[in-house]
Image (tube, rainbow, N blue to C red; front, side, top):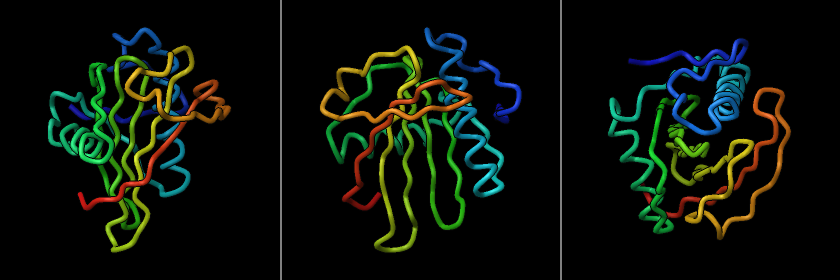
Length: 153
């Protein structure tokens, strides 16, 4: 069942099994606030097992583009389109958030972003990436990295 992410009153609903649930909830709320402020889009998530097509889309891109397989259990996903950009997210039990930004127009921006919740280590499968730090009122310190998608998905 879809869950609207509230960025005013941050909740760990759906993320309780994560050892960094509070930080992951803050990260998820940070994304919700961004999309509400920039696109007036209400950010909703669904348990990963209820939307396997979203998880398959993201894991397929990771595998095809960089041969990356995430070891952590996926908790929640979301997929939506804003201003000609398809966005897809997965939030993992480890505290990792992965998003795919895929501009639908030819030659548009297309990338995969990784964000690490406060308190989690860099997963082994992402050790090749350098992570920049960013402060967030909702999520504490977020560490992020990305790569550009080269293929068609």
